[in-house]
Image 1 (cartoon, helix red, strand yellow):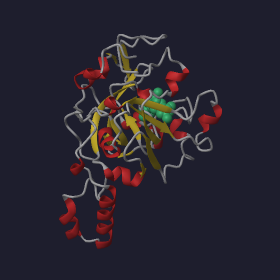
Image 2 (cartoon, helix red, strand yellow):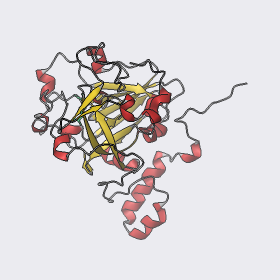
Image 3 (cartoon, protein in one colour):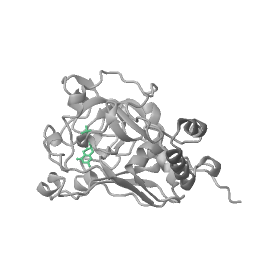
Image 4 (cartoon, helix red, strand yellow):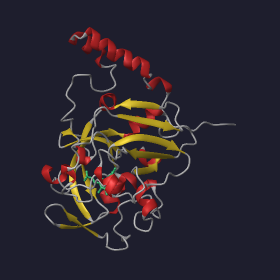
Length: 313
Ligand code: MTE
């Protein structure tokens, strides 16, 4: 007997809103243009309406910190975004040519509903919320930041991966004319690519981030949409995503291809596995310099440990 076991990301047909219905509702709201109609249809709308302000989004208080928030100018002024420059304090001065409007995110591969989202639709399609997360770079520095975003699981449910899809690959924009670091560092295998298993991406902690400190993401932090995966090193948190692909085979990733001995494919935060050139047992808070012990999975063990055997690297 063939028993169909529902995967985590599969939802009953009745719970999904077909795109044409959703679009028609929005069109109707726009043309009617009066509040009464909005109220009437409010419960049928999946997320924010056209004109409602998106930021600041409501904070989800389930996710708490054990350390002070990093000041905004620090988190937006000390960045890794190699497409612009390797100099963390210069990234914000190199992004002015980078165009983030218009922007689309193409979702393709082994899915039943491939889609190309316009960013303006994407930020309203799924409910945005604010979450305070620890952020740990593989370089052994750490911050604590208020992200705004939506759960990756919401998008994954909508595109509906086929049963043989196992991985989700994400790709950053490749625009040498707007991203000076691409030209000055031709030895990297651009575009920046990252990936995770679908099971990992379905975890409640994994977000597509669209905002920071109650505002839309600044360009240097990965506008208009990036990955937020707080139990993994920062390098997995790919910025300025233009494409998402669902695959059967494990996709290569930029850092793992370049230096597999330093940056594992999983890159989960792990105090017991040193980088070849430095220990990961401790982390240095930016900007205070305070030294703290590194937590397994960056302190998110209760959420994610069940995804792993412990040998993943
Ligand atoms: N994404 C792209 N496209 N290019 C990058 O160079 N750097 C990664 C990650 N995402 C990077 C990227 C690394 S190493 C880190 S630590 C974080 O972005 C830094 O994010 P932040 O600048 O918002 O703190």
